[in-house]
Image (tube, rainbow, N blue to C red; front, side, top):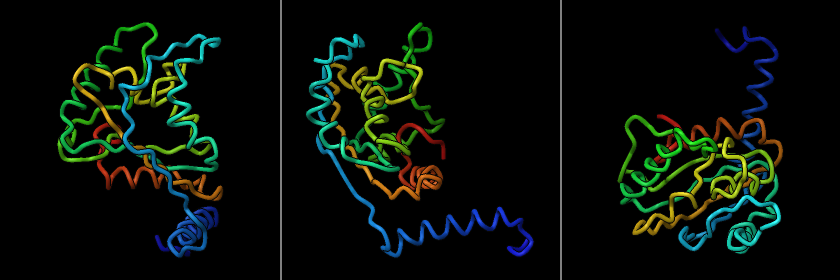
Length: 200
């Protein structure tokens, strides 16, 4: 089927997508970049989900939220890890398996059938259309509802002798990219081939 044979709604959607990506590629609008290096997970206290006790999130607020609080609009992000990452994968898999028969289990991103162990420097690729802290706090494991999937880094990254250190990269886009952020995330995940999450 040629373009002229497509329904008008299809053509309009394709044109909107092309215009959005062209605006980025031709530098007509700015993409803001943020990163938080050397996040040592062992330094973050275990989560406590008592609404009256926020002391356990002090480190998160100082190290992470202080950067994220002013980021608006749709974002794509990824967590960077060392290339030698088999122990990281094993710790994550162990935690995921431990949640299978737990009443208040923590939902986590899927494991791939053929994970790129020691072949990627990316742990996970994700996106969010709203204020990005609302997503990242889940990845650290400080959100009370375990059914809302995330990496839950604090729950397994503090395992003895693991010494998990991650770097968080965030790309913030203009609001008009909201409708296109998910396909862009999927395309980026295909290129970066993260250790967990999307299947290739």
